[in-house]
Length: 337
Ligand code: BMA
Image 1 (cartoon, rainbow, N blue to C red):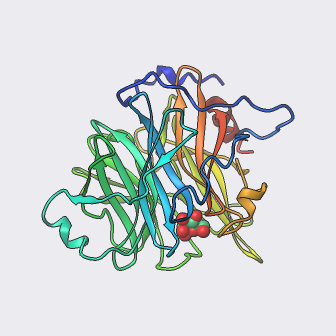
Image 2: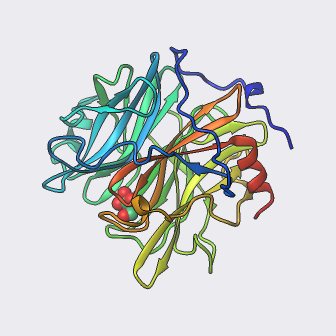
Image 3: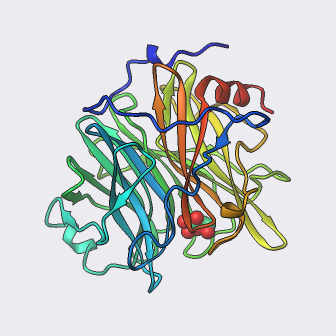
């Protein structure tokens, strides 16, 4: 099965050309995706007051890359910080958190108190970059903001009621509606979780919620599943990388899987990999503030070559990078392996 991503008239962010962060598959690796030899690419103590930097999202920007990083500080407050990179690998991260300006006066009502902001995703959509993240408003829910330049950010209203996590926008409208995946949750370390689809005419009012995917009993994804990076448009459907969680006798284990969603009705799952794509098996994924976590939040695709580079958090402590080829991931999904 050959899939040429370059045939998809996908929305492209401005700027470039820029170097694509990449390493060839090392000899002897049998998985569909492989880890960067430079992992972790962001250290936990890269900032003067960072306890950990992980679960972060990057996008092409200018002649390099920009991103929104989850930084937990040494008081263990969780916040979002801007990062910039010439090559997608060496990151310079702002020591101060992003300041969100209210996009309209009513948004100020939800800014009256700051609880936390974590697990960002960034999506180029129409003419700007949108950030979605888990925001504290009487419990976790989905925050939304946009930026043109990674200098100023305007906050929109929260997309959903609490409790919700892992809100991920599609990079174009579906029909004439904006679309988002999310995972309704509870206020704690949720022992359940399905992926849902919602749509909106204006990125403020969300409805027509549809079920997309449930956990799979007796598997690596038996406890909960949540969307990872912004879905990637291919000729076959939307490639969705996601996290799946199982509950072991020592707690949750977070791994990465892949599924294919219908292009014009993305709540319909075309196919879903049976195995995990990447599970916590090396020290920086197994040992950290939360052991055994591989948590993907962003992916870059080099469309002419079908190469994909996936950014994920390791053990809630560091930022890591993995590589693969989109057609091989699609084959992996199709094989249901
Ligand atoms: C979730 C979130 C994620 C984290 C995961 C594993 O509830 O807090 O940020 O990676 O737990 O601890």
